[in-house]
Length: 104
Image (cartoon, rainbow, N blue to C red; front, side):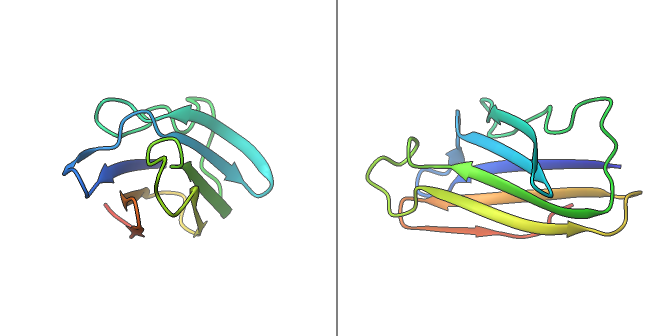
């Protein structure tokens, strides 16, 4: 069905704006862009791309956002098993930590 992400800066309590995000399906990069003013990537999947079962990976390049932070990037690997549902993969970041979960 669909896939979305949202990046929030927990150190400031705001969306993380202009973070570079890449999406991979297997080894193929299928999206590259940046978060918008709300910390989202609205066009994560191209309109003609169908979500298929398999291994995916979201890579968030946060070194530019937190130049003095500890983590240069966050990579989240996950598996899509059911293609008829929506998947939301939020990321909460700070200069020295991050967390993620499967959202709704």
